[in-house]
Amino acid sequence: MVIDGAGGKGTWGKLLDTDVESHIDRNDPNYDSGEEPYQLVGATISDPLDDYKKAVASIIEEYFSTGDVEVAASDLRELGSSEYHPYFIKRLVSMAMDRHDKEKEMASVLLSALYADVISPDQIRDGFVILLESADDLAVDILDAVDILALFVARAVVDDILPPAFLTRAKKTLPAASKGFQVIQTAEKSYLSAPHHAELVERRWGGSTHITVEEVKKKIADLLREYVESGDAFEACRCIRELGVSFFHHEVVKRALVLAMEIRTAEPLILKLLKEAAEEGLISSSQMAKGFARLEESLDDLALDIPSARNLFQSIVPVAISEGWLDASFMKSLGEDGRVQQEDEKVKRYKEEVVTIIHEYFLSDDIPELIRSLEDLGAPEFNPIFLKKVITLAMDRKNREKEMASVLLSALHIEIFSTEDIVNGFVMLLESAEDTALDILDASNELALFLARAVIDDVLAPLNLEEISSKLPPNCSGSETVRVARSLIAARHAGERLLRCWGGGTGWAVEDAKDKIMKLLEEYESGGVVSEACQCIRDLGMPFFNHEVVKKALVMAMEKKNDRMLDLLQECFSEGLITTNQMTKGFTRIKDGLDDLALDIPNAKEKFTFYVEYARKKGWLLPAFGSCVADASPLPAVAT
Image (cartoon, rainbow, N blue to C red; front, side, top):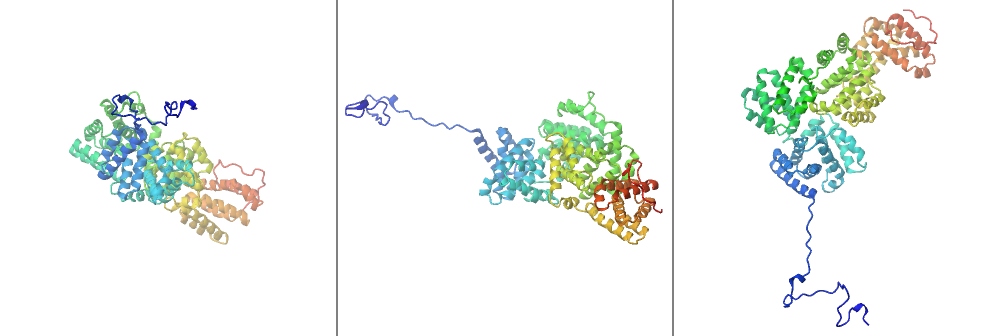
């Protein structure tokens, strides 16, 4: 019996028997080609990302062969698919990592050139995130992948295409045991925290294809002056193009406009050059607007050398817009009649005055003279503006001026600035941090150092950093700077390091001064001469720190039960060696620490009450100094 009609001789076979092979004889007279089995041909579905990766690999190979930044940028633009640009960054860096220093340098230069004009800042950050996430895989094939990638990250920070805050954010997202986390740590510790790190990082791969920001600025200034002399706009555009820094063309715009203001006869030539550069696409509309915006922000400083700077700027802007080489959106920052909104005249005058005062201070290092000059201005409501100005000017100078600025903050806080003034000044600085970074390469890191140093110097309390953060817009670069400052303060031996953050000097001398003050007071107490003690205080050369003399003298008087120290303070006051402000600050510090003092000196409050009354009679203290221990009974009078 055959089941399902299958298998027997003379049967048709099992229904839908797919195992039976079909044999078609092409020589059969009844052969029909339509009976041939269909052959399915698999069509490959194109993946746009794969296509993009193959295309950029060719662009990168060609760039490594020719070194032509403009061609690479043009090819990448023509490729389109801008949403995949983070993968271009990963491919460029990973290919360079496995090659010589020449290609590594070329890769960094290309990233700087593409930044903002071809690849957006967000895409640059995303590209480096992808690199960090794939660091474990890269390390399998590249022996020193962690160190090389750390150098790429550090170079990107130095070249201003990655914000320093990127490091903090990246560490939060990477597993602590990953190679990517090690990359960030290496970048921070080995490359970005070393003295002169920017120069070292820029030259690490030989620097043969890269010029520093300062060198670029000089080349721009030279080519503009040559253009003013020759009038050859074609040659000037060629020189701008040869610089190969399209991401830095805003500097060309700014310097060109300043030159037009300095040399009035050159204005038509300058405007002609900017117009031609814009029309041929050499200077992009975003770079043009950025150059105008940067000049507008610096008009107050520029007016010190060119009094008519603001009026000249106001006349150039409408011309540029009407001729079509400055975007009309720039008018949003102007008044309806085309004039830049005028600041309050008093604020403008104040800024002009304090710039002169600060420059004189950097030359003379005379803190008392600077304080007198500020008091003469009689505008304490603008103290935050002064703080912003002094730190901004110091950041653009050498470590000596940065150290002087930090020391000055200590003195101002003691003498005439309130904590609120200091907080508001730092808020103003941090709000404009992104603009500052256009001119100052390492602005974010330096602001973090100034903040951390202010805490170490007791100018700010750690809680003030929270207050500063709360006054800043969320997720702004300034908030990241505050976070960096907190991490600096929290590090081991932070005090020692931050006191030397600008190369040592006065910051470290503060700690040394405390020891010297203690020794000179002990010598005086054990039988020394008042005049010699005063001379020792004078020799310290730190008048802004004399409140420490007052504080330690009063504590020693309480401990030794010997009021001889009051004679020394009287002599210091009579000679003008210790000012009323410094006296008041010293007494205030004792007042703030009375509870702790009373643990070691049971009658500290009674003693202090007497010292306050004595100081008031002698005129040492400011009238605003409040009563400290109202219920304490005064001690017997001390002979004067």
